[in-house]
Image (cartoon, rainbow, N blue to C red):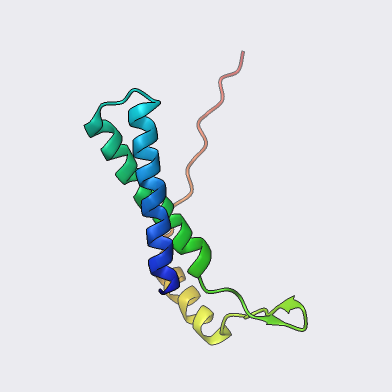
Length: 99
């Protein structure tokens, strides 16, 4: 059995246990407990999938490997950003009232 199927099965079992618990102990209706059990299954399944199977950063000599962005790509992005920004004229200050 693959790891992802096992994770989905675990989240399904947690959702079923949550639905049964809400029905018996939480005094929810059957439709409400099934709906909340389904929501619990989706949330737990998404979290477990993200937490267990996301790509990890590279480790080199016991430290995280730092990947610096390509300077050529960042310069062109900055030029495009500067060209698209419109300069607005400075506001004139309102005259101050003297007491």
